[in-house]
Amino acid sequence: MIRPRPPYTRAIAAATAITSAAVAVDLFSESSRLRSSPIYHRIIDRAAVPILKVVLPDAEDAHAFAVAAARRGVAPAYYPRDVTGVESTGPVDLMVIPFVRRRTRGGEGDQRGPSFPCVGLAAGFDKDGEAVWGLLDAGFGSVEIGTVTPRPQPGNPRPRLFRLSEDRAVVNRYGFNSSGEAAVAKNLEEFRARERLAPRTDGGVLGINVGKNKLTSEADARDDYVSAIRALGPYADYIVVNVSSPNTPGLRDMQRRAPLMALVTAALDARDAATAMERREGATRGTFRPVLVKISPDMSDTEMSDAADVVLRTGVDGVVVSNTTISRPESLVSSFREEKGGLSGAPLREASTRAVRRMYELTGGQVPIVGAGGISSGEDALEKIFAGASMVQIYTAMAFEGPGVATRVRHELEVALAKRGFKSVQEAVGYDHRRGNRKE
Image 1 (spheres, rainbow, N blue to C red):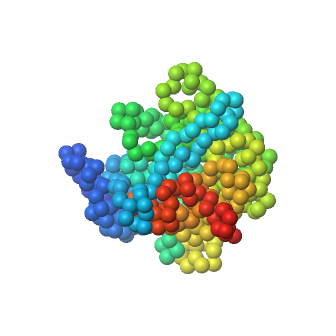
Image 2 (image 1 turned 90 degrees about the horizontal axis):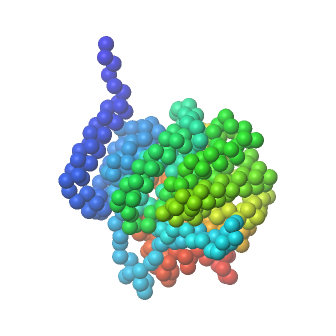
């Protein structure tokens, strides 16, 4: 007897057919103009995304479908907006060059990283680097894939992703589900090959977030990170060392001073060795690849101080602040609030902003900070920038508002900066720390 397919399977089949039809239309039309129109944005974000939540009630099924849609190039594309009339004397520049090495470990002069729009996509959405091109089209100035582990692993058992709709939040306990460095390298080779044929003009960059396999001991963890950096570094514009996910046992122990110092040093050595090899082989792409560390919002002030000391002593190129939290604010009302895992979204915003502000203070504003956690508007992004972030990342907001959130946040950030008299993001970084503006 043939068993009927579950409702979500039928929904995926129907949605895939619609997506395929849209792609077919795109092949014979001016697809970029269509996808960058405000009407298309409204159709996807206000109609398609809410319907998707109904027909795919399992959050992980919806996540997989969203990645597939981005891979097929169906997501809305970014469109610029003129904000020169918004209490501003001219256009607002959202481009940033957050990564500059003042003194290199090899004794060379300053090295500058790429310039790109300051609103990026955080790691966790495109874990295997399948949809980078489509996500950059959607308006993200940077797309950070991963977390990627050296060897394939399935992650934790399902269910492991939960929407807390009433709280505008998500709890995940994925556990570094990854296809492994070899499979991801193939995906990224395809992306770079496409880029060589049709160079992007939007300044978008690729970040690669790496971690250790679940069964790798702390003593051997450095080998996992070094392996991933060697395998994937040549494809990256920047690399993130993830030591802060709450879903891999023992991972956060690596945020302590001694193991963090050893790990960061090994990661920088691996990056430098790969860079030297590329230069010997006559690499044509830029070979300055910043290495960043991603930290938890749950660190004590002593732990945060230790991490800042490691960052300053090792010369690591930046810090991502922050990952998800294991805390549960009393304000949560969703029935999923007690699910184990990392909480992200609106309830994380204040804690992550405090962490950004504290890291900026501890490093004296000398180290670029990527602000992540609870950003869903231009004002949220500006809050992180004022606290000390040189660039910001979105993720959970996409689950509730769709991929058009990248365009909207960029527009709103332009307006927010213009209303306050800023002509660029760079001018606003760390504004809270200037005399008379300090916030606790």
